[in-house]
Amino acid sequence: MKYKSVIFDMDGTVLDTLGDLLGAMNHAMAEHGFKAHTLEEMRSFVGDGLYMMAVRALPESADKKLIDSVFQSFKAYYNDHLNIRTKPYDGIPELLKKLKETGIKTAVSSNKYDAGAKMLSDIHFGDLIDMTVGESELVPKKPDPTGTFLIMDTLGCDRESTLYVGDSGVDIQTARNAGLPMVAVCWGFRTRQQLEAAGASRFAETVRELESHILN
Image 1 (cartoon, helix red, strand yellow):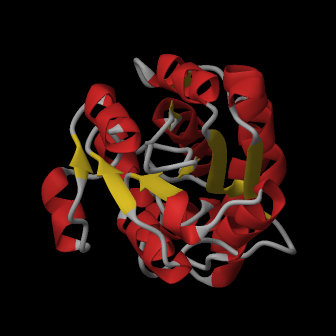
Image 2: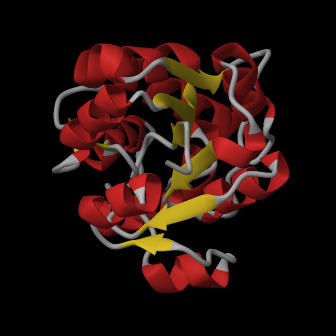
């Protein structure tokens, strides 16, 4: 068995969170007099943390005061509505269970704020995930590898036997910055073409393919 531990991104990799992110963003946009966004538009906003979603959702002319206000409105609403439509991608819980039974350590490294990431991981995966780390005062957003290194240090992982799994260019760069091999999944928020352009070289079109990358 090549890998002894796997670090997963959260949004777009193990959890489909797009519906709740869209609901919270459109709530904030309406409060500030802006039109609602579509699901496809929201898909292009995610990947670099919640604050950047607010930046991308607003017109380019928006100043920092407006961005901050929309972000605070978004976050307040999302705190109370982060698990309305959110659900694991098909096959992910079964994969995590198999990895646990095989003795492979699993973790989540997310650009979602730490409390929200931990809450969703606990609700949907419980003890199938050994550790979850989100953005905080101590852990900068990815592609900074601090969160990844924290996971590896805590769980006793090494670079040679740890795989990073994600769905975005940020994840590709995070894995590169941490010195880890990486598999890009194609069911998330970016297309295979976008992932290839961002530098990915190994792909999983399905959870079964991902399982093969990990176990074979």
